[in-house]
Image (cartoon, rainbow, N blue to C red; front, top):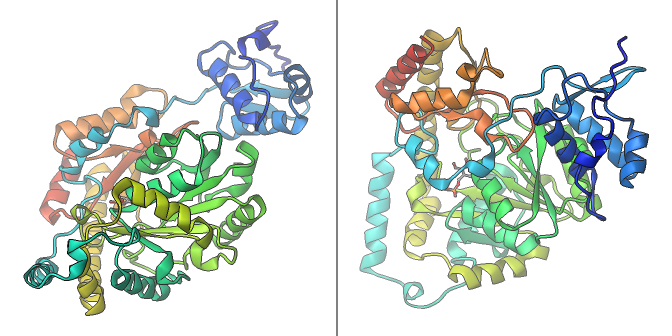
Length: 475
Ligand SMILES: Cc1ncc(COP(=O)(O)O)c(C=O)c1O
């Protein structure tokens, strides 16, 4: 075996002074990764031993080991038995970072076929909703004319608690439910109530960019924890970032990859939260759209220690413009969440709340769900068939058993920018297809390249034309 020496005699001077306290494996990891990415540590260069690193930077040995494990797991370094750890020959391609994500970038693609976050417009439900809205306006109750509970009306919270108990195994009573203007506000309330600037938070890697935006907005350190075929790996999370205050997860249908978190990982995550007094923010954004077996029960329903906050939304099942979602808040966080809510926008709008409560209580919501689920599943099949017909040589389609979007990974992706998904997504948007680049949803580390495509809310023809256009992009 070749003995390759570190090519910088005192490369350690390139690493900035590490902060004196807190988990430091991540700082060391970031510093080493920067050196590798910038080429200051060349491909094939031998890295120092973990003992040497630990001594030089005053770290524990286990922190240095954790740092190396991260570099290896993400493809920046390789371990050779008996020889040491080396900079990888083929250093991963830098993903487009989430920091560049702007809210207005998202709008461009959502208006185009295959855009994300588009709900089905169901004429029957809209008509039922309109009748109930005008009924509430014609005979307005006193709740519209005075200030209300920061959690929203009790009737709606009671209806949601009953729905969640049967549909998702969530264990809660209505007093724990806070109605919000969607998951976005729910997560923001939780983050502001539970996380401080000095904290660290886990997020899935890749992740839902808007959740990353909320968590990063608290000033906390947001650490991406890799997602594999079993979902987020809490063991890896503990090694990457021990002592995190909270974890944001989408266990039912990981966004964007679509993986369902296995029971083993769910138990491990709950155990982590219990041992560390940490919070789990469970975003269950699309479990109503399940096409195969019923979804696993929610994490919240499995949690016996009150560490899980459960977030749900009507954005997918009804429409995003409604701006109604909810959080089931753990008892220990409830006062703080209510205080944040009261000082930000006091309480939720009462008008749509009444009409939506009627739909829930009168059984219309369940019927709507059945109708819409069938339509969205059929749209999924049209998109999958179109991608198979036009893009099979270039894309591997992961057919989702849940939700409104799918991921199609690029067969040929890598350092060559012709095969970067960001270029492909830009080209797609230019020809009128609302594709998003998978790599743009990675927090850090090597990104997978692919397209994230929505299938809900578009006609079959629009989806067929879109896949033909995508096929032509591969030329
Ligand atoms: C992962 C995820 N969570 C939640 C939501 C819903 O957000 P909101 O309820 O704020 O509309 C979405 C919508 O795209 C999503 O993709």
